[in-house]
Length: 427
Ligand code: EPZ
Image 1 (cartoon, rainbow, N blue to C red):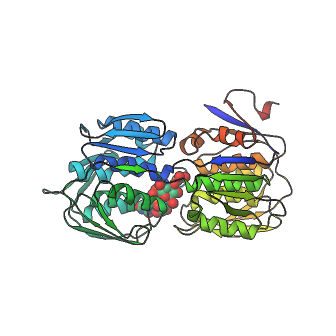
Image 2: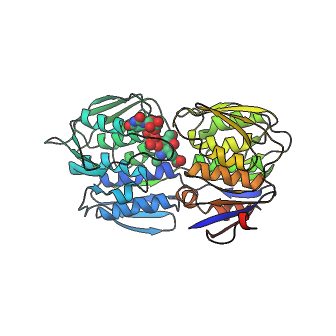
Image 3: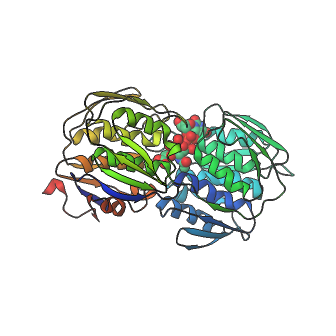
């Protein structure tokens, strides 16, 4: 296992290119199962979660060949409808194969994901929706066993009790091959759902209303090949914006779609960070004081939970106090004690972290147990004095393409080294 060594200080300067969105690519890859033939997905990021998804698909008999960021798939020889625990426990999003498998195959056996570092994360809404479409669901030895009724899944009206990204995606995919019309109410509105709808439409699916809380899907007897270019990763973009801001840098960002980040950019504008369009790119600059601005995470278009940790790192250096409230996941403050080890002044009360800005963070040996918490520590390390060692970076590799290379190209002093190499504690 590797770790990152970061010598904080330099202001980030230069150009960074944003990769394809992990959280769009994952459901889209599973969506390709809906066609018993070939498909092509472009702009796939090079990430561990994508590798895990490919392993799952390979296990099901899907053939794949990649060239650069393009993946060609052939799902005509699918010979298994099972997602085993060994893979699902590595990546919860594996559960997104349930809808497509059930729709195409009439049967699926998918391991229950269990809880994870950021919360319990049940999938009851996915299962309830599939049941409304006529599926028989049983839980057996840690696995969800789902069987479609004779004649296939039936269109249904599903009202989600909570706004769920994965639940919306799973049911949207299942409904594309169901008999009749499915209506999803209180659906999630994330850009990744819009991108999935586009990918499914390239296969001939009939979907309306994606990007709103009411999505309607007219089921088809069969779908054709998928051909799709994955949208840019708004969370990666938001992370590099925070990196530019925390180092008082001047960064040009290419390949991003920042209209998906209005909530972050609005908050940062009030904090004193400038983000403006320059031709096809965006320029992020920060020089003067950083003002504290409160945030509360919400489903899209609200402030994303996936940027809460990075935003907190930034606020540790603000001139005053900011309240950061997490409403989506019950345990998404694991970065707090680690940031405190770097000199941050944060108190958590219930779902809110009160962050009182300090003049300087200090390098330390830190680690985190999820992707966004880990990258928040990298950001803190970029701004801290001295050396920061971020351990357990396999979390970063799940969701940030070539992070140390992208940061180094912007002038950061960051190196990936084996975990057992001498660290800051022993210096
Ligand atoms: C997606 O997770 C993302 N993952 C997460 O990205 C992101 O944090 C999350 O949406 C919220 O935006 C992918 O897209 C692969 P949810 P998902 O279902 O779909 C509760 C990252 O760092 N809930 O919208 O699993 C749930 O417990 C990550 O890239 C139920 O109660 O999230 C949570 O509190 C991690 N029952 C809330 O809803 C259900 O059946 C939102 O979860 C489903 C969810």
